[in-house]
Length: 223
Image 1 (cartoon, rainbow, N blue to C red):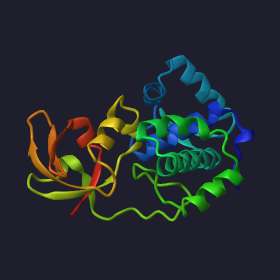
Image 2 (cartoon, rainbow, N blue to C red):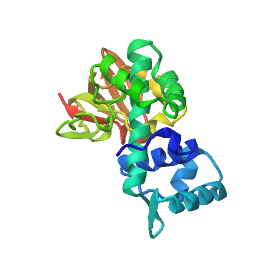
Image 3 (cartoon, rainbow, N blue to C red):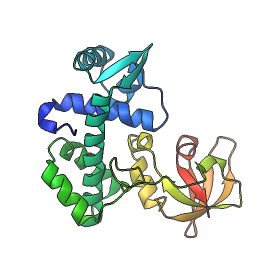
Image 4 (spheres, one colour):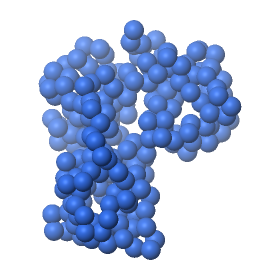
């Protein structure tokens, strides 16, 4: 059964979404990671985790935070509506990636089931957000043979598959990636790797330097 937004305070939704997305990116979810992602104080996170535990949304495994089935259901609902909203805002309204990400953060808490269904119809049942992250409940199938951009050998070509959520929270990075055409479906070629981990890629004849933090996380496939 889906959990409707009206049943939970937006703060619960925000935290469930954050826990879900951190885990999705392969990050161990501990309180420190939530503090970093949401930019709130450690005491505030501790208090919210206590409340979520009481509401049956999470469970603890040592210092790791895990969503219960109830928490995961709520998280998937919020993530789905966020990513559908991003699709609508970029594909239909023409907003930039960064603008859409910011606005979708507001929409995810107020989109009703009827509007969600309308999004799916209008957008013809998309399986990913504009950055390639899967929309929960869609018919998404992960591409085979993906690797991090930093693993591509100099001289080899690649196709961008996915920009993980972790990179969406780095100031200015979404704008840089979109302007550089480092977007899902775009083809490029690795031309150099610097000692500091910067990967230089050729995107439509333009040399783009991608720092180590991003190149370790951008997912690509061979092309």
